[in-house]
Amino acid sequence: MGCGNLFFTLVITFSAALITYNIIISANASLKQDFPSNPSSSSFSVVDPIIKLPSSSISKKNKRLFHTAVTASDSIYNTWQTRVMYYWFKQQKKNNPDSEMGGFTRILHSGQPDRFMDEIPTFVAQPLPDGMDQGYIVLNRPWAFVQWLQQADIEEDYILMSEPDHILVKPIPNLSRDGLGAAFPFFYIEPKKYETVLRKFFPEENGPVTKIDPIGNSPVIVGKDALKKIAPTWMNVSLAMKKDPEADKAFGWVLEM
Image (tube, rainbow, N blue to C red; front, side, top):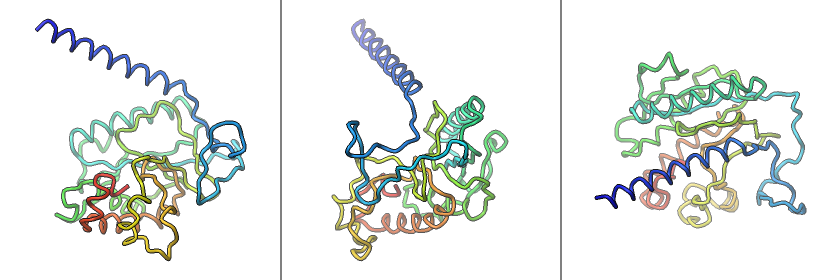
């Protein structure tokens, strides 16, 4: 029993130390607004093989505000996450009044208001019809975004698609520019690996499958008008892939990403 307690204590201590280390590193790391350098530079760089990244810098005099949007269900866990996330969003805005962070909206896809409407700016979206998500509740995300973009009055010209489990330790700059959005690449999204499956939804006349960027829908900063055009396709393709057994098996929990 004594050895078990000692082991448990060591695990807790190590976990706490690791979490503290990551928080300190994140808080002190610089969040650069520039894109990766050119391949000829001596520093490490990542080059988009399809679309050349713009090299022109954005004038810091021109603030390009973006609206942060987070989809959420009304579950206790998801609500707790969103409340914590919104708290840190407000802290960053308060401490950095010159940042490009604009408004905030929780897109609640439960279909009805909850008791946190006064605490968190919220848009109530309708969920998918019963059975359409096939038990994969995340499919409500693109449908909820479609409703919000069509019905809400969004002042900012850019949208940051975020998630409830994102905690902001620094203000986020608007990394999109020259009509191109900014997103995080995920190593586990491999379009080339599943080319045969993806050709059902991305025919060959659309070009090489490498045109499908290995990104999710979050975190993404994109122009509002562009997202309004993209969102319906995102929703329809996600639903179609879920209905396709081969695609559903290949992409699993990252399907709607």
